Image (tube, rainbow, N blue to C red; front, side):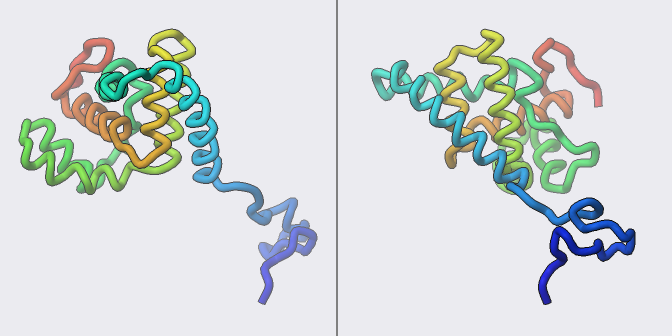
Amino acid sequence: MAGVGRNQLCPCGSGAKSKRCCGVPRGPSERDLARAYLSEQCRAAVRVLRRAIDEPDDLVGLYTQVAELPRLDLRLQLSLPRILSPALERLRSAIAAEDPDGFDDALPAALAEVDSPIARAQLARAVAALRDEGRIPPDVAAAAVLDLDGVGDVMIREALVTALAVDSGAARTPSGLILAG
């Protein structure tokens, strides 16, 4: 059985055509749009890094700076749900208790829950905004975008860990406040 066509009556019973009522999903998904945005930003980032990088040690230094970015601005931290999942809560508790073994055990599951093209694109947009404001050097912003577009997890991991550390009161916000839990 074929699906409802755009010009057929909507199955909801409204009497309107499907395209004017409940509709037929068309166009790219939000995930596809996020991937496309990241790919476009990556192409520009490669051009910046080609001019900026002379030695492999330069790249290591850039990624060290990328890992520090979530401490710079709240936009570079992942938005946490109001109610944390068990995996996120385990990671939050390990951060608050300063338990390195618990942290290492909890991180992969928590990261798997939040790592998505949409979250990566959101962080890439924040990086671009801070670069445009002059708060992040272009080469550091380019390295962050490359990390977000590829299989790297430096930026997404640090954005999650910093957000949970601030949420648990184990770290200060970028403005210097400590949240009490």
